[in-house]
Image 1 (cartoon, rainbow, N blue to C red):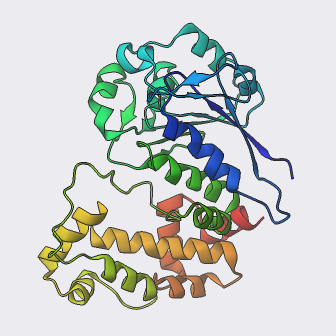
Image 2: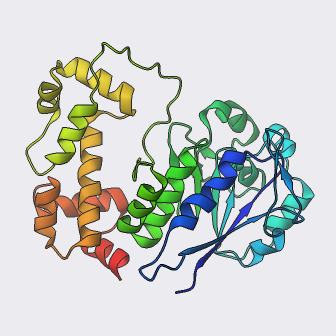
Length: 319
């Protein structure tokens, strides 16, 4: 199997944390034969060291010519003045992006979205970035359909993530999309991070941590994941948490960014997708084990969530 070529374009001053996420996460994805599934290369415009926002430098492996042969190009967060403050793209960056082949997948992490937007690559497309910079992004790039409340946005050949650690979620999503849940879960375990935070989950925007004497919904969420095939609803979840429905709804949303009912549906769909990817169970059995009822219900939910039938989804991920 030929490794998927990934070029990570570092633009000074680069956000150091963002820059190393793809190498660590994508670089940890291995095929059945133990061979790397991604060939990840850090590159700069001229191949020279790139300064970070904290004063140290990163020595890349190549220069911008790597963009001409990359299957995926990732732009980590940056404080580059033109895209970040003026809505302009430096000529050297424009020339580098001009090397992209048609069909190259483009990905931004955090404020890397400012670079793609300055290049006009996000016009009339949905995208996200760090919530703290949403106001300036909207002012500079009004043509972009920005939603700063999301962890990441997958618009097919262009993807973007929120700030910092959300880049891990997006890279795991890329692995899941390319190679299925089993491979993504293996990488998540290796990196000691949650295997799945849905892209629609809200960014954590200045929510205070609940006081220690306030009950959390964590135990109830763990309980729900162990009982997905059973009949569950919000009142049942609230009773397990020993809270009123109103308090449970408020606390659940504060802790997860989602309403309990929407979160439950997402978990059931995630379980169904995992079973479709890793087993030969009939569609009706997948629906039953994930708590979605009948095969007809699963088909309806799958088409609404990912745009394909369960059978087509299984063929896509299992070949």
